[in-house]
Amino acid sequence: MTSLTPADLIAFEQEIAALYDAGKIRAPVHLDGGNEADLIRVFETIDRQDWVLGSWRMHGKCLLHGVPPEKLKAEILAGRSISLCFPEHRILSSAIVGGVLPIALGIAWAIKRGGERNRVYVFSGDMTARTGTFHECVNYAYGHDLPIRFIVENNRKSVCSDTEETWGVAPWTHGKVETYEYHLHWPHAGAGRRVEF
Image (cartoon, rainbow, N blue to C red; front, side):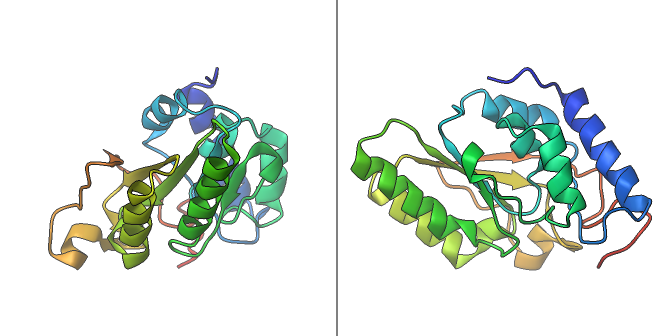
């Protein structure tokens, strides 16, 4: 359970955006926005002993899982916005598309074999959810009854491409995968003034 509100998450991203636009962050930054209420809803079911894995947009997830704001900001200022890892808070991320999916399976297997009660929550974007790695990991996880939950965050974009237009089909759904849709308030990378790619 968290005491953070959507306004808290928005304020943090606005501060990071201002630092980025002022040239204080000299590396790619991927800001979250438009999904604050959805994230808070998901994190209401996540225990601090659970693992949280994801890709680029991890600022809000880190805050909601207990990473102190100043510690998170220091990592972002150091250029690690898209590869935030806080194992002491059970947070791992990777800038490699789908890179955390096999790691999430390994952690889930370790939990199951160790008889622990915690779980793994792995967040993926809608384009990542179209990859073979994602499908294989979902099928394997549920085929082996692993303590893992997959959450697809669908903003209908991958970089600057429309996901549905790219694939020519509607969003992929799977009964064991949770999906929520949102409109991202920020550009793919950066804060709107400086262009990364």
